[in-house]
Length: 163
View (spheres, rainbow, N blue to C red):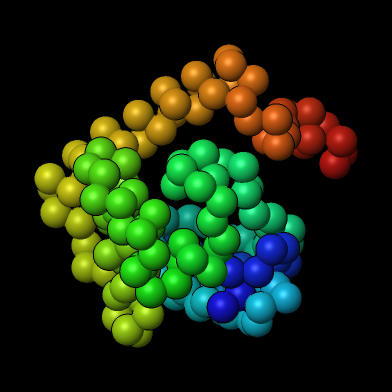
């Protein structure tokens, strides 16, 4: 439910330590919104040399105009992340080449408490193709000035501000 709210706050903590063949990373995230609270935990094994710790916070908001454009009508986050029976969601989910069928398949798995298996080679190729198409569409939208709610950030400038 946390992801269906109009505004969300995400707080995360990450700890990593890798020395040679022995490495571990743990990450805990808490997502809060006016609809509820959700969390995630990740634990990974790694090799190499690395140590790190981090705290992450983010404020997330709904891009209603983009959702409305994509689904062809005014649509809420609850309808998008809901049971998938909404007509606009079903129509979009049937659109091959958009990535929406994969998204809704994964959302259904998560609602049942299941996880997604590792992608096949074909799924990986398709994912890369979709990523490239999304990049092209994003460039087109930027050039047309369609995405006025996107804030461009220069990572180098932001890093300099931290010094």
